[in-house]
Every structure is written in C-alpha cells, then in structure tokens.
Length: 363
Picture 1 (cartoon, rainbow, N blue to C red):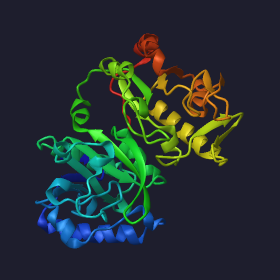
Picture 2: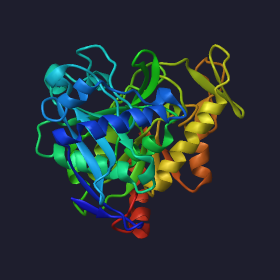
Picture 3: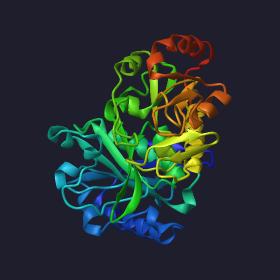
Picture 4: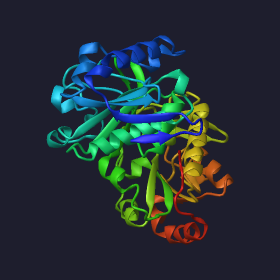
C-alpha cells in the first residue's frame, strides 16, 4: 500500500521482512537515545524483535521512495509467548505471562485473543506526515485476517502526540498503572470489530460517555458499572468513552475527591484541582475532535456531575452544582446528561442530524 503526502514524499507501508531487522533495530536505538524523556520509550533486545517478524506477532514498516526506513510498528501476540508490551513508543519488560487483557478482566479464553499494539518509532526526518497513524491503520488491516479481537497498548501519560493518535483511532484509556519496572503508563483498549466498522459509511452522532458507565473500572475505587440505559445507546450513537480523572493524570484506584467551590480536594486533604482541570480540558478536546454536542456523564462526580454534586464534606450531602468537566463542556455549548437521563438523548440526536456532515477526517 502507498500513500502520497503533501511533501510529495512517497511512502510504502508493508509487512517487515528479515532484511529489515537491522534498520528496525537501528531506528529503535536511535529513537531511545534521542528522546528528551527516555522513560517514555522502552527498547527491546534484537532476539525479541526478530521473533516478531513471523512467530510472535508482526512488524509493519514505512519505507520512503529512497528505500529508507521512515518508521515501524510492532504488534505482539502475548498468548504466543506470554510477555507484555507497549504501544506508540514503548515495549516490554513485563514478567513472562503478562497480558494487558487482564486490565479489562478478560477470561482465559479471551486472553488468547489479545494483540498488543506494542512499539512504534518514526524517523525524525519524516515526522509531520502522520506516519504513526498510517502504521496503526496498516497494522489493524493486517489484524483483520487474524483471530485476535482485543487490541491493547500502553503510553506514557505525558506522551500527548502518541496518546492522541491512538485515541483518534478509537483506543480508550481503561487504567493508569506502574509498569515495566515502575514506569507510569496509561493502558488503552479497542475491540477489533470497531476497526472493521469504521468505514461502513453509516453516520451515527458521536456522544461523550463516562467510561465507568460502560463498565470500565476507572472510578476512584477501581470499579465501573455497565449501565443498561447507557449500553442501550450504542445502536443509535457512536459512544466516545472518557475518564477525565485519568486524562488528568490521576491513577486508579485513588483517594475519593469532592468539589469545594473552585477547588477539588481528596478526603485526605490533597488538592487535585490541577489534575481535574487538565482532565476537563482533554475531554473537551475529544468532544471537539469527534464533533460531540452531547455527553452522558457520571452523576454527582466532582468532574462529571451535572446539576447535583457532593458538598465536599464526604458525608454524602448533595448540593446544586457541576463537576469541573461538566462545567467546561456546558460552557462550550455541549449538553450534559446524567446516566438516569439517557433517554433524553433523542434531542441530541435531532440536533446532531441537523449539524452533522459525512466523511469527517479526524487525523
């Protein structure tokens, strides 16, 4: 497959062969050495990469017209070898048997169907051409012929470029953990069927949804509940899961927090206002990116609550008010509903249908 870029540079994206191994290893090591933040990227040993040419996964490479390696993307099948991996500038380092599918509580049979979108790098000479996006898409097309269904990856929370690339392709943050010897990482997830449906041409209005309402265990107590009313929206809407707390850099589990005026404080007295504001801003970016005019957010949350929140005494007392994210979304013209108001989204559907256009380019 070939892509012509605005710079008139021609790239060929193909599956790597044995002859590409030296170039891949060189780019991997040069990327690590040249990074301003070395902990964002974990390199692999040559034997590990070599096994992923055929046996334990595959590697997609982008090649310039002059046959230079412009970038690569490694996909790992943990069930074939039992080790973990990272995406978009991260790699293994986990103990044998690690499988990111455990983060979304997959059963033993489902764990056999996990693919790690493991490690990526782009030659600095070719940056600015969306090559990482192309490599993600090419890797997903390669996976269409394979049985793996659950696509997972990890990214450093401050690696915003890679994080936004994966989110634009439908990957959702499901946890923030310490991995690879204590390195902090977001864990992202995407079901393969969503890859296959992206080009169906059928437009559904996009709606932001608190990820915990879809069963993702990202609440302060490491819990989430699949709300039937919210699950029922999937036939009519394209749901975009978000967790403002995680997007703001907070871990799961975490101390419970409540809003007190313009501040957000934990029960132990820590001020987490900065993280909540950052999460609200990141959520707004996603809303704009996907053209969302409505959101269904967790009721009474200090970030997502709309109309009613807790008063900051941690006694269960409710007061009128909005969470930090709900407040920002409303200020930008986005309607916010609680999970008990999910049926009211019909008005959102009507509004979206008037304003929407087909063929949105989100890259």
